[in-house]
Amino acid sequence: MAVWRMSHPDVEGADDACGIKDGQAYEAVRLDYEVDSEEKDASATAKVKTLDQKVLALLTQRRWVAVKMAKAGGGIPNLRRCYRRSGVIAQIYQTTGRCTMNMPCSAYDGFTVVFYIPKNG
Image (tube, rainbow, N blue to C red; front, side, top):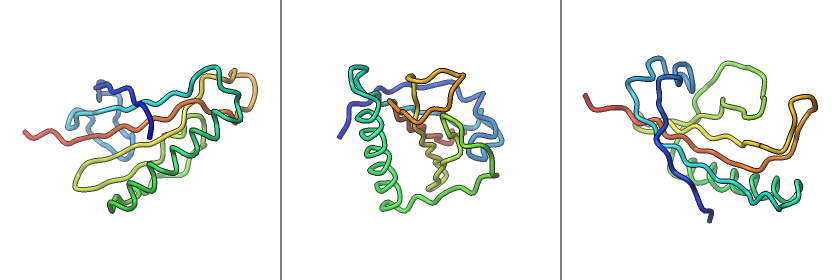
């Protein structure tokens, strides 16, 4: 499927991400996928979009439910795609390192999934 880089980010800044009111009540596991920088924009974007579709299909097949989020700008990354199952929250988004801040961008070269897992305690 894809090679992922895993990390355990600090969750304190996650307040209000995916409707989380208290980031300290969760632990996070972050999975990052990056397309090789040698790939052309169109090819990299196609790979990211395909991976996005596969991850979304996997979540919905396993009965993860979309979290209703307030409307906001769909910037890069769009942090408002969140799913919940049994108290665990999954946040998925496409990323890019290929664009400058001064121009609109539609090329993606990365994909991230962050799982917010409730702490037992």
